[in-house]
Image 1 (cartoon, rainbow, N blue to C red):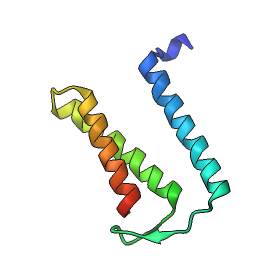
Image 2: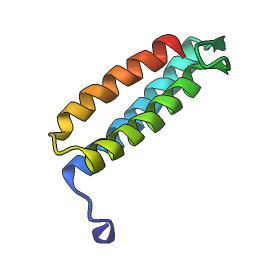
Image 3: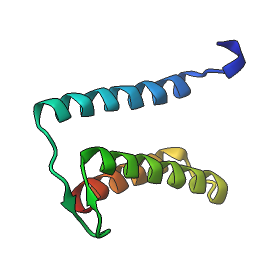
Length: 90
């Protein structure tokens, strides 16, 4: 995998995504999700909210890198807050 230039942070990121998907699969099998309507006005299930949280977190990180010169760890905290809000109110 030399052509991909893997680094430890990159590998940890993709491992965290894989673990999250595995946990969501187990949760879906054990506790089926019922769709609910949140602030967006659309029905979302647990997996939909995970997708929205991951997509939004990607945009938050890209904007952070492009617009700010602050440590990336603050973007991680902002992403965690965003994900909490998505799972709570969307």
